[in-house]
Length: 364
Image 1 (spheres, rainbow, N blue to C red):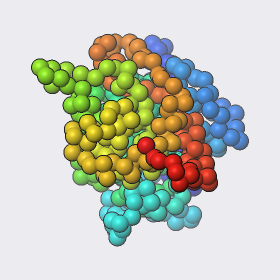
Image 2 (image 1 turned 180 degrees about the vertical axis):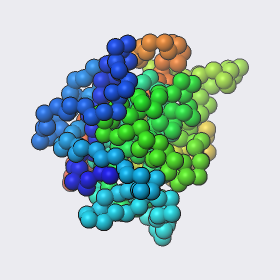
Image 3 (image 1 turned 45 degrees about the vertical axis):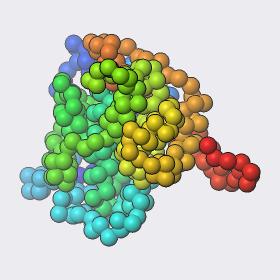
């Protein structure tokens, strides 16, 4: 049972290199790890092994207490002195189809700030790269997480990491030939969650999603659209026709988009087509996607500050992963300083709001 005074969103990422070493004792993977000194503020680019930046930690986790045998076999959310059951029957009444998804997300969960979701998705990208998971695995996990949260109500922020890592665990079993083990997923939470808690949350998520685990993600739409605009007469439909380096730039922009909570307001195919419009002539994207300019323009306009942030960051090189074939290297999820880019995009958006352009200027 988790105390409601837990103020941290994410536990520090554990060293995966130690976990994979031959001397590592796997029986210790779910025990509490000693925490680093607490910091009043998040420090970006903290260095740990394998070049992965550690997530933000504000307050250490309280000691865990094993569930008693009398407790029901599902998770609970601490809310003051009362407990709200996190159970599939506790379904949110969808009285607001007119509401945007990002607004519904925040309305359903008043204890969760948009930055918390952004930090969580960024951390899942870190874990995905550390375990050399495919990009589609990460995008499936993001889809499971958002769909689950939109059907729940008043979830405490202390459960976000559990829901996130469980979503990634499910997605890896759907997409990867050799998915990470349950002990590895529990290990990266630095002892914040036990294996049985991930299994319990897995059953809950599967029931809430009604086992609908094969959605078309923004990444799958992007790959389809990019393949179609890149094809020439006589080319093989089953072979990638787009250059890997350009694909990396498009996926970096798409990654940054899904980290932003407001991306939930757009359909996956619209988000993918809008991203591709910044790399390919928009008329061609409209032809292959079947989406009109009117349908794409709101998303393209919203994406403007994110595009500027990515351009300011510069191109990312193709990383080499051990035991990954050269033709598949670009499909492995990679992490970069997305939170800094998102912060820069937010500043640009605020500046645009405070100082609107002259009436003679046109939007491109």
